[in-house]
Image (tube, rainbow, N blue to C red):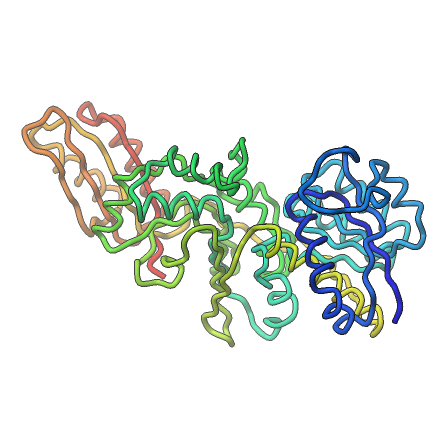
Length: 426
């Protein structure tokens, strides 16, 4: 049985997961790949750092050139994350005829075409299953298993941190900051949680899914992004009252030849399978014109689930190398992105107003004058200085909502527009 040498760039959570899986499943991987997989080098910043994993010191290096110039290393696994120096390392490795496996959603979302073009030019393989959904095989599904379909929409919970926070707020009544603190204590959220809670992470992942599902280049700039920091326990309680659950959804739909791309908190029916995806789990709901509705569910993060996807890609490279089945598709930018003002949705709107006669009627008239039809309205509070008005609308164009809200905001009796949340009746 042949040996194959690989290198790891990074030894964080994912890198540790890859190391552990390659060691604990060594015999199974030999049978499935036809190779004895050896980690020859691991790139780290500090060789002398204490780590909770037993890696021989002679395997560690802090010099990328040790990996780049070693012609016996055939596969480079990039798990550093970010753009610099990860993209540079991957490009240089491919130019040395080394195959690449990466879990780097930011690099794929923003520099994916450069990386794929380099792979094709250098005739090497480039795999990135772990970049979206942790251990969920969504990339392979879209690239291979679902190619007989015209994909109509992909809707997913693809950030475990925000899903954990919203789960704690929904099931246990925590406010956002307490739920975030708990997520940080459990290691689900970084010390700086901006990428997760402001939906940048989900935006990068949706870029990748959209490009694959609709066979086109999608820019991160074309995706509407809204995080979860404005979600309050009162919004979650109103959602329950109306039969909904709030989730951070990543949504791409093709409607009349245009792509609708958005990431934002969304109310969905409590009976829908996505509503019951809790804690740090991820789930991706796909609609194809042949397969119908399909949902993939699993751990969206963590060293072993993500490491599983990385190692699966290593095995795929080894199998494809034996069979000669390697093909890199370069996508072209041929899509039209729908303006957010033209999307159609239902809306939850919560407003604080002064408790004066005629306020509700005035606001309702403004909605009507802007072609916004009200499905339901709740007024909480009586004989108080301020009261809460909650509206649920029928399906309407977002631009109509925005125009109505500008006028409502300017009313002398309007204290604050507290929240607007889109509703998807999946």
